[in-house]
Image (cartoon, rainbow, N blue to C red; front, side, top):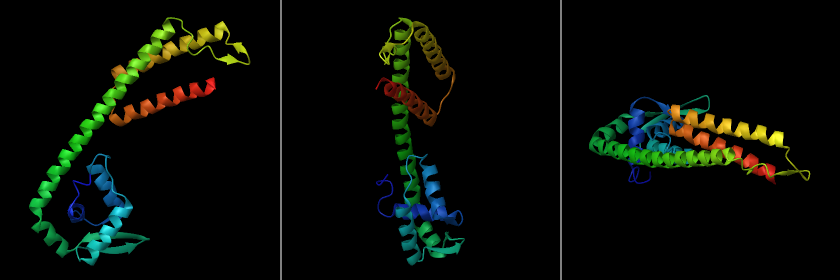
Length: 197
């Protein structure tokens, strides 16, 4: 992201955002995060000093209300925005390209995670259906789990993996939803590992 906003380009983009109306710093951060679909958001430590510098240069002004500064573009800021219109158009193209590249990387990562998840579920189902006791060898107080308990767990595990597979097949999940689902499954697996300790 630094390459996209090098050489005063973040300042230019902040002027563009403020040209749409007055905004406070965190609103500008949110708008930038939205523009990059959550893949980039500048910190307050990046935005506020820049706004202060822009104000000292006469490009923006601020009003304070309720402990919050709201920034507005000045006529000098608008003049700079007009003078750099070509640079702003190039910046928008660079942002679009950067967002597209990041989205492609994330989609490839999610596809890989979904493939891994499906493969792990298939393997778990195979092992369960073969009657292997990959989970049931846990000794509780020196005694193995009773056959009835093992059978019940076996059935629940098969039902769980079948239902997860069915949900994944019929659902159209967003990247965020697939990442959340992967984290949930990782949590279940970690819980089982803790039981073995």
